[in-house]
Image (cartoon, chains in turn cyan, orange, green, blue):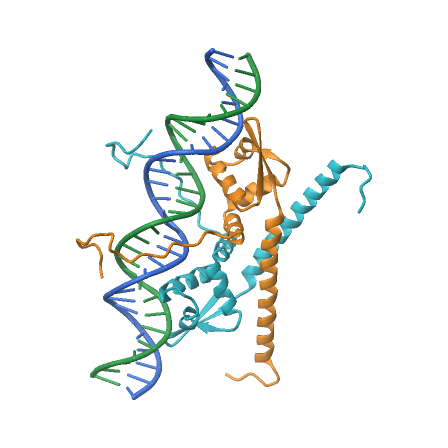
Length: 128
Length: 128
DNA sequence: ACAATATTCTACCATGCGGTTGAATGATAA
DNA sequence: TTATCATTCAACCGCATGGTAGAATATTGT
């Protein structure tokens, strides 16, 4: 059914509301953006305030401020307000968790695929 | 400036078109969704066709088909068409790359933060 | 008191995402 | 041939995201 006709748009199918993002979800989504990965790199050099981070990127101050908020919600960055400046510092714990998940699954999959390959190659002579 | 006035909407500020997502970006974005992580888990049990994956999820067939396309573009899944069925299998290489990046940065950050803490605790007593 | 500074807030745009339904395509089975 | 099965394609919705600009807020310096 092509819906560009004259029907009231409110009587449509509706997707179920999605559950809120988990911490792990937010961490992966956060590091999926190269600007944010670069911001984490800057912050690895020590505490910075928002302006000092923003100055290093060719995008607007506001865009960087938004990115920082995303990193904060993912738990990768902690903010301390001192006067009119906001100081940001790295919090590596969620990254550790994210690494653990990846490592676990990667090892599991590789083991499984290796086993499969070994099974397919079988007992036939094939040695490096 | 509130822009809901009567001005032609084409004379607005314009965001620069974003560059295409890199492989690493796509991998992190792909695993940021819990359904997709679950799909990878199913595929870890061996090759499956689209329907047999979709049957395990409470969302529509088409939604699963879309998720599979995302995983494919991230390089995490390979598809082989045989007749009318599409067989999907895991490809762990991009995951290895993603793990490497995380591991590298995590280690670097933790080392830096440990060094900083050592410096602060340091040789002198704590001062308020 | 006033001006400058650091930052967020609000509003907007374009694009992407995760979901839906329905139609189209292509291979197999009857 | 025709019906059925496996899958994609096309269009749509609501919401998030990455970007912009400008106004508001709070702190600091003169």
